[in-house]
Image (tube, rainbow, N blue to C red; front, side, top):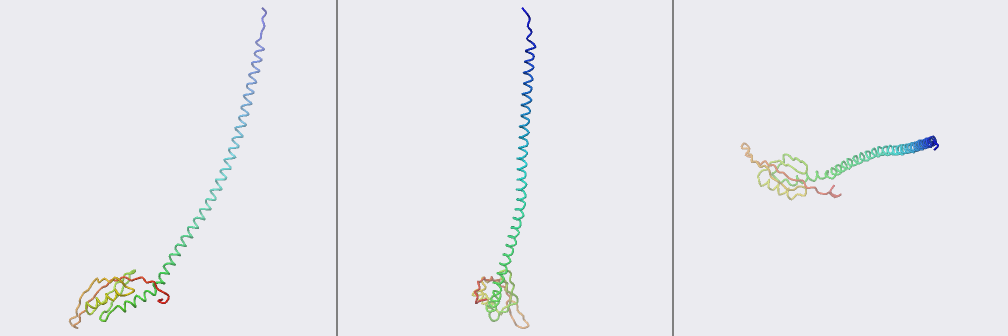
Length: 189
């Protein structure tokens, strides 16, 4: 039998297939590289766009924070002005009240009672004085109780002091009372 050598043909086919495989592999690698490169560029573009949006939002947030601070400052100023206006209004309303209060105290003092001091702390009054007798002190307290501008008289101290050289006897007293807040009409002021 004759010897036929088929190996070079098979080697050539094998080499040709190997070259085709390497070419297909190189083409696939090149195609995959292009796809990955396009994907990277696309993602970088999306990320840059989102970062630009984030910067814009941060700038707007800073501007809005400044506006909110200005608004809060204005509200604080408004609250302080409203508080001042209320205090001024209260002072203007109480101004005639002091005159009425002093007039009422003067009307409440009976004969034989002499006041030495009147102290006011808020709506509380401390009245110190001297009287010829304890009955005059109790009459003074009844008059305070009937008053429109005073209420709740409370006797704190009564001391009987006598001056033997002059033959005088006096009761020194301290009375606490509370001022009544009365709404004044236009005619009263």
